[in-house]
Image 1 (cartoon, helix red, strand yellow):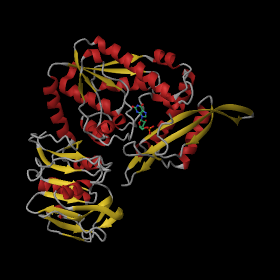
Image 2 (tube, rainbow, N blue to C red; image 1 turned 90 degrees about the vertical axis):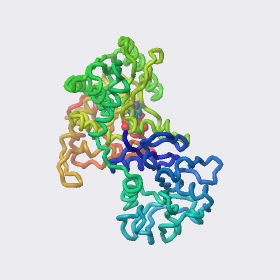
Image 3 (spheres, protein in one colour; image 1 turned 60 degrees about the horizontal axis):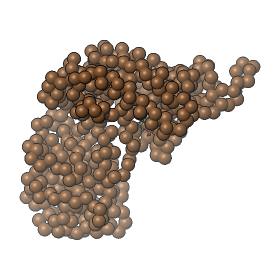
Image 4 (cartoon, rainbow, N blue to C red; image 1 turned 135 degrees about the vertical axis):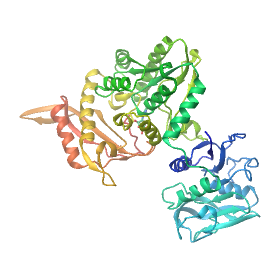
Length: 517
Ligand code: XMP
């Protein structure tokens, strides 16, 4: 990578948003823990210090020595990052009288300051802090204020060092992206050349260099991430990549067959393993959700490893891990935001090295890269699907018959979403499927009375689940049109034997989760 910005993560929930904004500006960046600055990396053009859940006064607050950075590279502190610098270099930071939270406006700012080029008068910014800077160190100058916050932003005189107490990265800071652009382009001199095409070129070159003539194994799941990782590796090392796709019998209707076909069309060398017998046997009678997950995780590793061992000269295990998958392990505050869901694991005794070419990307970036690689839209646009598959959507024990019922109901729902045409915000034609983050049907452990013709029925109930989200960490139930829900409900009850009632899940996350188990 020729040029990059380093974001030092002090634990704020919006750190990843900073990364995302920079990527939208076509600037490559890496987010690293606050104390892991890559000293000596010549490609670093500038540094951003993120916000933090801590106050600079907290005993546990993250502190870092900036002497190797400040004055050498352009530096921008955001919220805690700004307070940390003000405090460290001799200014005053005090608890704000009332927590400064929410919308505010830059009532005065130095329009000539590089950071504010192109920023509109009275621009709205988003504040979120319990402390406030009451005095800046000598040699610092205040460059913006709001009605409540006198030192909303500062710059160190004659130095490319800035601090802002608001969050330019959040949507509600109207000119926030402009300020970040000013920093990365004008101050740091980045060329805005990061694009899916440049990512593909650089990554393919890096993979060739890293892997050479070694053989690589990759576990495919049918999802976007592992598919994109596979096609990228295939481009770099061709036949030296062997993919393994395990069918645990809990995939969607016909998914194994369809996805295998897609992979073959993409020219991938894929071994498909039908291990459903084993999974159904081991899951028999198990009702506890965690127990189900454990069994599936364990069986998956066993089946995957057995296949991997047949490739005796493999040196690498590739995975489609993306940035949000790693947030938990990267999260330096130690708070678990989302438990890591990836099934599978590294066959230890094989001594494989790990290759994760997508580990810095967000989902929508992975999709852009996938399109660049020519992967068909129906694979790229696919909703996420949980590793344990329909097992976490069948409440209670799992049988082949229940899986059949759920697959049929799910198929009607998902096809319906694809077929239902709507206009997007720009007036372009799209379908409901693309307007929801994820959708599926849940088979409930409930039977209820119904009437079909003149006959009393006593059959199963299912719940439809469809959510909107940007990262699966929070989600809202999708406001699907009533007419659509009516049609799907009718179709399911008429066509899926064993179901006589359909409900719609209207819970958001939190406090619910997307999956029911
Ligand atoms: P929850 O239910 O935690 O789900 O709100 C968040 C996202 O993660 C997916 N999910 C999984 N993905 N293995 C996976 O690969 C899993 O065990 C797993 N459990 C949940 C879920 O479908 C949603 O997209």
